[in-house]
Length: 267
Ligand code: SF4
Image (cartoon, rainbow, N blue to C red; front, side, top):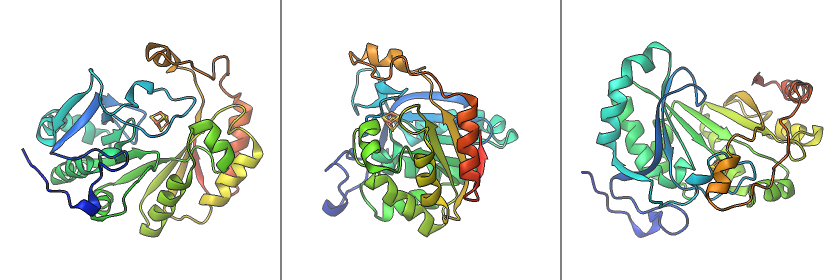
């Protein structure tokens, strides 16, 4: 097993990040996912998230440590990845790190993506942009990431706080960093009635990403209630109970607004 000495100034344990000893804390694995990036994907759902989205469909990933989480080395994960390698490649797919928030375990993801690159396997980081440290580890991870899928939940800071529970400053900083690096990025935008489905929010998003040439596409994701039962299992109240998915006309209208900022829209 690999072990790493973490310098004091890089110690990711301070706020959110866990100390790294060569293993990742994994919520679950999906061997042939179809919605987390191009083609068929081997998807790792990482444990831990600092956001508290009202619509979270993975409520059970929030805590870093739970009874059900499994701790795995890169070697153990790669053994599984390699058994699916040919299926993944045949469909133009690869692997995706999601969660929870994979950046909270960025050293593990860095090591995993590096291992994938040794086999020429496409890597995708599905993130909410909650990066705590801009250091060599993050750059190394991004250097081995083929595609970032960045959730931009709401550009308006006040609505973001209500919807996500925390400010959006870290996410916006990360988006700008990706643009500076010219990192291939797909933005994901969840259309939540009453929170992100209005013209003003769509224009704010369009203005924010309009000049970012690294953003190839924007994926519109209509809100759905599918993860609500997990909140109850965790003993929490699901506050969006009764909120219906947005009508198709709303999604098409937002698509049109964002196309006005020169972006390709996937819906
Ligand atoms: S960022 Fe993702 S995992 Fe975290 S609370 Fe929001 S939806 Fe859930």
